[in-house]
Length: 314
Image (cartoon, helix red, strand yellow):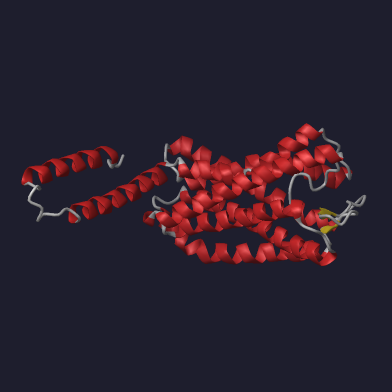
């Protein structure tokens, strides 16, 4: 489900837009992989919020991967229907998990600690399976994607004039998710200004990033649903495509630059340095006649000075 799904540019412009979306999707995969590995690496993120980060990152990886795959997939009716289901499922998962972050953000204003999220985990998990399954099934039943005329790749079927159930199955969840995230963000910003409280970076920024990346495409989809045709310049479509495919990389920037993750990564690095330094001390040959206590003292002092300068946790 990308920005060019309902646009019919010229061949050259279409290739340029497809390449840009492929690159943006690749960066989104890299960013989401960073969030995945960081969450797994830092032990203090092994909580409900950490599991939510993992779930959202996996959904973006699959969704972005399907977007890239569509550029190279050799088409057949069966392949396009399988692609249609997987693409809609991954897209729906991204919507649901982002909304879960928005819901957690909204409810966090009434709690000092994030442990309250534990009671919502099973509900989040159930919704993240039900909604994408419905979207994937609807995508197949309405044949949202079909083989192109050249049979080289899957494309969205031509949009009929008037009411289109297939497009509506994408537009309604998309619009609902964006509106929900914006409402939650505005409510929380109002609360923060009033109470001067702090919020978790993941809760604060993930829904905001999603809303910013998706808003242009949502507006275009609504116009398409009601007008039946939307003609936009190729440059605008290019910008829309890049923006809508960049949620993963922007999430990684917000997540990686947060104070909790920076201090966690620093702590992990310091623990590894401790292990290396202990191994070095154990490998010293104390039976060597040329080794003296002065050598050990100098080495130890040098090691400690480097360790203290590099491993002070802010």
